[in-house]
Length: 315
Image 1 (cartoon, rainbow, N blue to C red):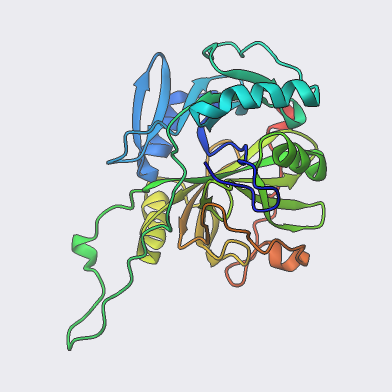
Image 2 (spheres, rainbow, N blue to C red; image 1 turned 90 degrees about the horizontal axis):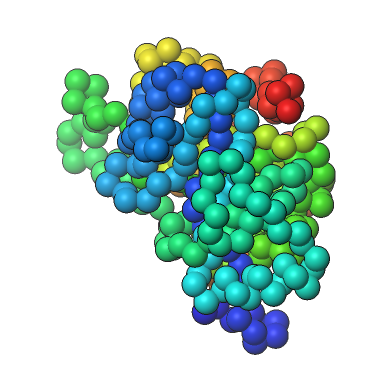
């Protein structure tokens, strides 16, 4: 249990995004997109489920819906913390809700920011507990160091790094994730965007929040081990029929190299390499940054509709 350095008490915080669940109108198109992206896509209980190869954890579920829509978010907590969360929710007057249709009635269900159903459930920590692998080219030794195009392997993500949610009120949403769920601010840019990590250890952000007219899933971000994997991923998605997106580039906040690939419904899946990491119990030097630093150091111009919440029309 991690102690709070300010008062010596054990911190109470969610440790992982255990699963995010969203709906789309075409499951076959979703299967094609995420298989092409490099995920292990399975069918379980009438839904598509997203795994990464070599990892037992189920990161996401996709169900059929009339339009693309974020449905609920399951957050992982340690077994000894579920009762403590129940008491905190009661003290803060956070209302309990019934599970959404298709969700399991376990743990604690609450209404989160922008009406997002959030489940707190006991789960093993799936957010990273150490910095992501960093494969870099070996030193020159009188031989070419680039991988052969003829032998290059497809990009296959290692794990879910984070998700970015749209919110009508970023400051209010941030306060909820801090005060109720125990996340910590990593960085922000005014009231437009905020990045949050778990004090149990995670990448620079486990959840990010971006200003919009309401709830929506902007992107899911998936760790890959090299800048080559980012480029190969961009190439394999273009060849699969998904050329639209943003990148390759590098973020300021989080420091990661990226390629966002636009899905058929206007949101994105991101290949992410070399993101900053916050060790368990460490204090990250959170700051309020200029708007220009909330996006990128270098890269192509931002697509015109990159920050458009296409879910709003369907809600």
